[in-house]
Length: 121
Image 1: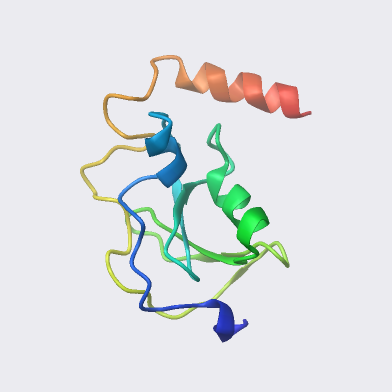
Image 2: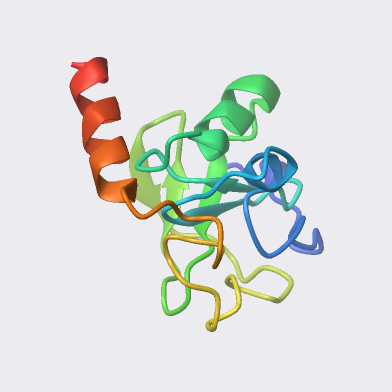
């Protein structure tokens, strides 16, 4: 692991996906960039903003930003890795649902994700 690409003092950019919040969208699960703290949605989400952040910045290490999860992902090698503790908080608020945020997830969210998965095949 390249420690040079990790800033343990970088605070999370928010409690949800930065881009989805800007677009008044929704996400399935959240990931936190270990280099800058950017919070983006996972690849199961429609926006796939965590992966887009890696592609745009080259920040290769992400940590889950879900309650109870502490795993890391290296986008460059496409495998799980182990990383240091980051500045709290370690996850979205536990009272925020997944998918989330509350009030923005459409009732047909599962159908929307399945349609997107079919399109990507």
